[in-house]
Length: 449
Image 1 (cartoon, helix red, strand yellow):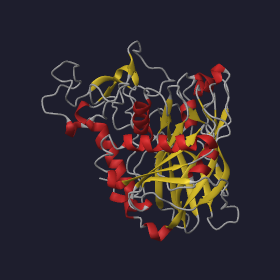
Image 2 (cartoon, one colour; image 1 turned 30 degrees about the vertical axis):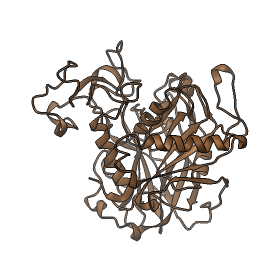
Image 3 (cartoon, one colour; image 1 turned 180 degrees about the vertical axis):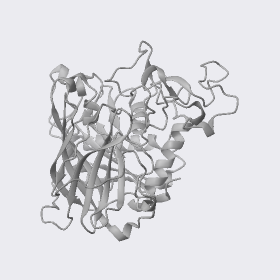
Image 4 (cartoon, rainbow, N blue to C red; image 1 turned 60 degrees about the horizontal axis):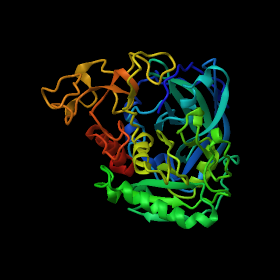
């Protein structure tokens, strides 16, 4: 899920006399940004900026600094460092302080951004913890965070100067859990590094954790495009020990002391299983190379969640665990939108995820504002009607089927059925599969194609 709630322009300046001139919101990066050479600006470590993200009824979002942390290894891409995708409700960019050149950027979504779409956000302000993570810079940098407004354009929200040599950059580790290598395809810089973090597994349940992690790693490669890119994907697991088994179920008055503080009833939604403990998650994840995090929760209750460039969460022991495992990864890594919809919903209001008249950023959704410019037009067979009727003639074709993004009207999906539409052991539709594979090859340093 993503958020497109109204975002006011805020410039919060740390250590500067005034805001710097930036490119117009929504513009592409400077044309030379794709030629950034990694070794000219970064070393092999990673830098993590931990932030507090605050907002509420006044619709003004703000950020404040918690910590700047050096992690041992940057496992991510070393080519095409400036994000070419346009994905995410938020985006951060890293500028060389001396020249203001953009040397890295990344789109992302956040749990806080989703909270902004809830009724509670119209009633009170809240703060959540989140992180920006990028290669460790050799020299001072200037970091800018932007968020989408109701028109789908990026507006500046925050900026921060960072001197990587400053003594306030923290180097120590706070955890020392073992790392289990399940599949290691190659060096982290040349692989998609998937990291499984266990939650609700006690010391006595570590054998179960290892077996669960191996079981789901095997399932992962049953699906395309992961199967044909197996040689590019590494999967590891951190054996994080919880004091108690299971997870929180607030509506039932059940609370468990676990390593990652996972919980059902996120935003009071019955099956939404996530964690708000971003700090612990990041500290534990830093023990191993990772591009994307899976949180595997030791529970038999159905639930999960996935947020782009943050995490996938799934319950390990449910009947639909395989479906949730693959579906949520589509959100968290692939930036895919949900394709299911509510048959009773026929109109938009300002609190919905997708404002009317704005094209969604997700690669598998469209508002069909221009039928001649559908994102996946090159995959549609000539003669296929747009919009595409849900009749026997077209259900096995790629088309533009109305009903997606929780809305029965006004949003469209590329296939009649898929794992992003239906709670079943289905594949991704070819459009989603292609989008995921492009990201996979990019992150594994095959370049953006």
